[in-house]
Image (cartoon, rainbow, N blue to C red):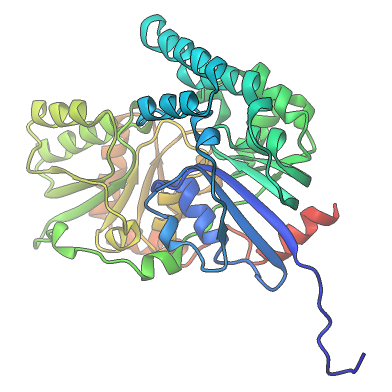
Length: 408
C-alpha cells in the first residue's frame, strides 16, 4: 500500500432508540450530543418508536433514521391515535395482541391501572412476536419509555445501555419488570450523579455499571430557528422573569404563582413569563385568575427557541419539585442569567447556592424572598451571572467517551 493511500477503518455502529422526538429535554440533549460526535468514526442510527415528532428535521444530516414498522409502534400502545394502532394489530393478524391491548386499555380506563405498567406487561408478553432489527451494532442505547426493552429484545449489539433521564423513584413503573430487563444490559448512563445513585439504589445489580453523561446544549439547533422577541414585553422599571417547564404538578408551577402573588402584593414591578404546555394548563389558568395575576403571570405556551427567550429576560426561575438534570437550568447558566431554583434532590449538581444561583425552599414564600434579593441587589445579579456565563457540564470529548464505552 502506498504511503499516501488512506487506510480505511471500519466505523463503529451506534444505535439510539427513543420513544418520540417531541420537544423535550431528553430529545434536545440527544440532538445536541449527535452534533458533537465524529462521523468519520461512527455510523449513527436513530430509531423513533413513535415517528413524526417536531425535532426530526433538526438532527445532524449524518444521522440515519431507521424506518419503524407499524407493528413495533403499535406494540408500545401509544396514547395518541390508539384506535388506529389497534387497527394495525388487526390488519397484521395479531389477534392475541389486539385482545391483550384491549384488556390493558380497559384496565387503565375503568380500573385506573397505571398505563405505563400496563405497557410494560404487554411488551414483555408479546415481544417475541415483533420483528428484530437486521443490523448489528457496537453500542445501543434506550432512551425513554420502552426504548430499553426494544434494544434488549430486538437488537443485536455488542453492548447495550439504558439512559437514566430522571429520578426513577417518581416514574411509577413496574420495577420488577424493569429489573429483569436491566439484567441483560452492559450498563447505564445517568444524566446526573444523583440520578445515577438513585437508580443504583433501586436496582442494586446496576452498581458499578452506571456512568454519568451530562446534558448537551443544542446550540446549532437554536441558531437555526426563529424567535419572536415581541412576546417578551419589557418596560422601564419592570423586572422580567422566565420559567421553562411542562405544566405538571411535579414541576411546581403553583409555587411560582404564589411567589408572583407575594411580589406583586408587595408592590414589586414584575412580569413573569412561562414557556411550556401540559395537561395541567387549565388548572394553572384557573389559579392565575383566582390570584388576580392575569397581567403579571403570562403563559406563552410551547415555544421552540427557549434559549433566546432566556437571553431576553432578567431572571430565570426553576420551581420544580423533582428533576433529573434540568436542560432549562443548563441553558440559563450558559447565557449567564441570575437563577433561582428550588431545593429538589439533584439541584446541587447544577447550582451552587449563592455562587451560581440562589436555592430556595420548596415554597412560594422562599422563592419570592430569593427573587427580592436578586432584584434589589445589582451586584448580586452581576456576580451570579458572571459565575454562570458559558458554563457547560457536558464532556467536550463525546467521541472519546463513546470509544471508551466500546473498549471497556
